[in-house]
Amino acid sequence: MKVRKRTLLLIACFVWGIAGLNILKIGVEAYPAYLSVFHLFLSLLVFYVFQFFIFGRLVAKHTALLLAGILFGRNYYRFGSKSQIHTAL
Image (tube, rainbow, N blue to C red):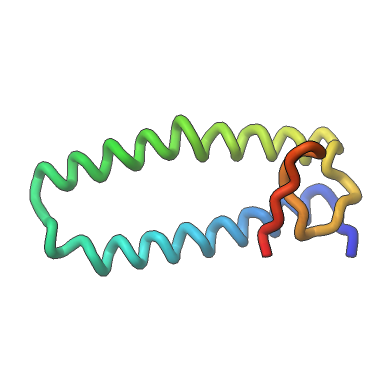
């Protein structure tokens, strides 16, 4: 099943959003036992590192590839560049 660029981007957002909510749920359930100023600071630091140095770059790269048409016409379950195909299923 082939989809348009914007639809593929929306599917990717939905898949990663669900994954992020699951991680958030796990963290919220486990965090009350470790509630302190130090742990809050450490959590914010880890979030910052992952968001700006890992996930932010991946989102920018894959969004640019998708909107440039490099991934256009691919099946909806395929994400990534031509040399590095990741499946979300």
